[in-house]
Amino acid sequence: MITLRHHVLTIVAVFLALAAGIVLGGGPLSDVGPGVVATGTATDESAAPVEAQAGAAYNDAALSALAPTLVSGRLAERSVALVTVPGADEQDVTALTDAISAAGGTVSARYSLGDDLVDPGQKSLVDTLGSQLLTQQGGDAVAADASTYDRIGQLIGLAVATKEVEGQDATGRSRAVLDAVTGAGLMEQPADPGRRAPLVLLVLGTDAADEGADAVLAGIAEGLAAQATGVVVAGTVADGGPGQLGRLRADPAAAVVASVDGIDTSAGRVAAILALQRSLTTPGGAFGASGADGTVPLG
Image 1 (tube, one colour):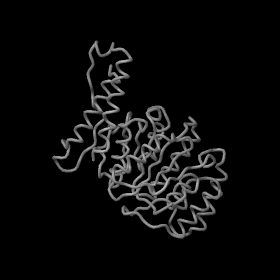
Image 2 (cartoon, one colour):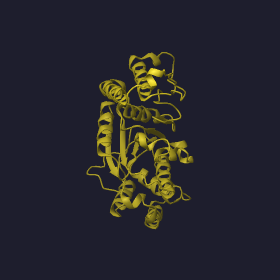
Image 3 (tube, rainbow, N blue to C red):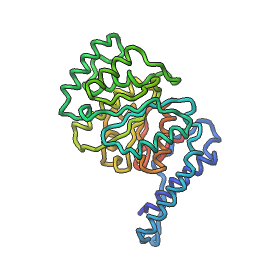
Image 4 (cartoon, rainbow, N blue to C red):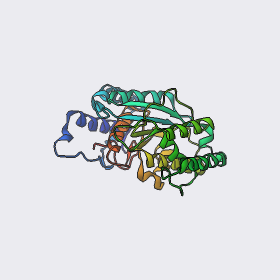
């Protein structure tokens, strides 16, 4: 049996190796595989819960202290559009914003999705608006055959993101989309949208545990990925496994976005930053507490 203490110590060992530069010796960095195993003893298995809690708290504090060093320069001169799903924990959002800053990056703006946008019962509203905007946009900015939520995701992506890694100024078309989506109450208008960002961090909120809601999330994530250089979908430890993020990972949309569960921990927030960096060149990947591709991406 692998105890919480063993799991946390494994994460600490990985991060300490990263901080010391051990993995930097031989060309491009590779991903941590999912098969990191720790062995337990009878004494470990029978340790009192209070000991496990104390160990977890200590190691989380150590990772919090190490985090600025671990992420320093990872997002230098890069901007991130922060998109939040209704119910996203504000403390987690603030901590992620701070982590982006510590990594040398900037948050171009925060875009808060509205309840109606993620409510399957409001699909008609989303579909109508998406069709109207598609007609107004013209050209090939958005795929004509996209599904309802893929299409609205692409439209929002057009307004907030870009394929240019340096970022890109807003255009008349991108402003028109932003005004229309926020005017319909599907997203909050940020005070200062700023430039469109190459990276998008989509932070999960309340898990409706509903197939319809899962399809909405997958469509929006896939649509954002069509317009951005890289997209990372992030959730808490509880969102992994059978949770909302775990279910997204089983959807074909997961192939074009990276995912991280555990942003309610110091380790998870570091993993989110490293996943954003990786997404500048490599799409996809499942990382975090239950990530199939490892605890953290190292490349």
